[in-house]
Every structure is written in C-alpha cells, then in structure tokens.
Length: 174
Image (cartoon, rainbow, N blue to C red; front, top):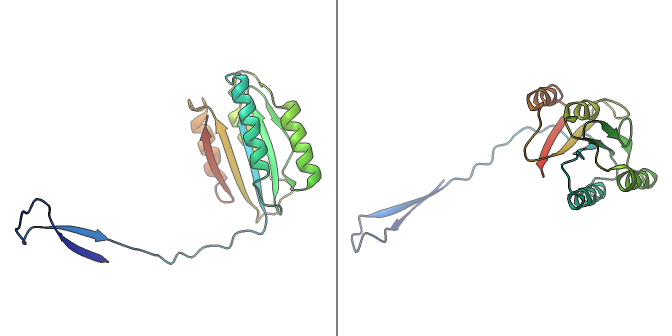
C-alpha cells in the first residue's frame, strides 16, 4: 500500500492542505486449474438477412481470420444461422491443413444469407454437443449476433449456464 501526500494546488502556501494519492497493488494467489491440453473453438455466427453484402463480406473475412488464430493442437467448428442452422462439421474436428481448406471453401461457397434469423438457440445447442473431444477439453464458443440481440436470449443464457463447467462463451455484436 502506497500513500503519498501532495500539496494541493488550491492551498496557496498553506502546507496543511494536501491531496492524498493512494495506490493499492493486490496480487492474490488464486489456485488455477491447469488448462486442458486440447481445446475446441466454435464460431457461432448470425448470417441472417439483415446483413448487407458489404457486412457479409466483412464477416466472412473475420471468420477466415479467426481460423488462422486458433492453436494448431485444437478442434474447431463453424456454425452459421439465420432461420436455419448450417454447420461446417457435425462436431468439432482437429485443426489440420485439410480441415482448414474445407472450412475456407465452406465460408466462401456456403455462407450466404440464411433467412430472417431466430436460430440462435438451435445453433447454440449444436455448439454444445459433445463429440470428438475428450471430457477434459475446454470449449470456447464465440457468438457473433446483431447488436439488437436475440429473441430467445434468456433461454440461450440458461443453456450457456448449464454448459459453463467446460465451456467459455464470448459474444460480439455487429
């Protein structure tokens, strides 16, 4: 704990008047579980009709970028939704050159407008399915939705809560 007294600019020569500056550094020793050796990265992206062609193009570019940002010893999947759900793989697949090429083709050729929206709950259910990963795999779910949110938000939050033991969910608004 650091406490410093500095003369106040309004004291005008009165040495009894001081400003206090307090700094506190706290470094708790938290017991942290070791991270699992493998993780799964699931990108749940809203491709509904609200996207203009420019936004759709940018969103595709972002998903491509994310693919190249995940660790090589991991699993991944892309789940797109609108009023229907479209998934790259049934469950997460290992990061490999072949699977990345398949993902790029999926993004380029299949991710277009998927209807009016409303499929977030089904997309999230699909994201939380257990498949090829081990029980110790940590799943990171990245959800990209419009800033207006989702109609079934409370139900989706409850689903995320039920899966919070081995999953972390991050949301982004566009």
